[in-house]
Length: 116
Length: 113
Image (cartoon, rainbow over all chains, first blue to last red; front, side):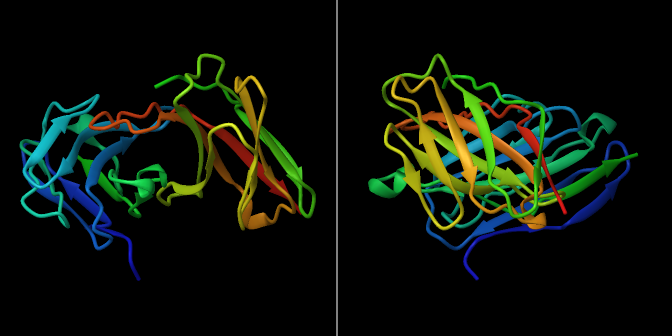
């Protein structure tokens, strides 16, 4: 089925470890983004990309890196995990060009990350 | 993008219509109203969007007031599976590279048997 695939679904890290959260979409969406969701807070944008080779910071980018080498993939890297990065992470994608640019975002099922 | 205001929670009886309000008094002329929902532990799901006309799809109806300062999402026959958090968001048409939406806490809808 077409959509946004996130891996892993669950992850436990120790403080200081690094890891990469994977996000892939097969809808040829130009726009991809990463959000984190914490209890009592709305979704907050970490990084986003409007096409291969183009990335930009969102609201809460510190401690995270991204790259976009292909249209399909948008990995999120945690450089040195901290307990404050314990959260649920969602990847979302959408069209930018033409009439389909007004369609909504398609979200992945999320990655639940715990940093101890 | 403009901010929105939604009630924190609502209840609805199964089989009845659920009417979820949203205020967006600072909406601009080029901003659409979008609705998403998030069922527990899942990623948000797009429901519907509109500019100034009422819209309907297989999931819901969207009623936007004439001055566009508020809207209502209608689930015509709510089921237990419609229990979720519902988010109302405004987003500019042709936002270009600016895709920084403001997500509030939404309305937690409980559909009761």
